[in-house]
Image (tube, rainbow, N blue to C red; front, side):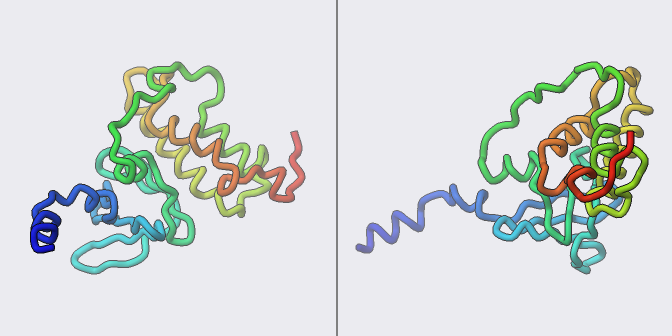
Length: 175
């Protein structure tokens, strides 16, 4: 019995990483932490911790974290930290944008073609993603290629629970 306890104590803490909180630095300062059990997102600045406000947040590494009612929608970084697997190449990397960008499509779908669903819960985060995508494209040498945020918008288009279509939200969509 003593040998078993000693063996357990000497084993490396392999599972400790996957059980801990995910954290990252917010681009404009502060440390964001996400609880793995509840997905509650908090921000710590100058020693003060508060709930992270709702919206799309750019992290220092360029990734984006979206929160809704204080709950983070797990991004690739969070999912990878929980699964302990190396990141895969994204299918959209280096792809040319033809016509409307993914974030423009997301805003049209969520907020409406004529902004008739502007008060929808996901409209503001959609618009924030569009602003980020526009900034990335403006800063790029080749504005016609997908950016990191373009990829995040592609993923958001698949999330039909949070990024609800304006037409399904009850608004009359006019074309």
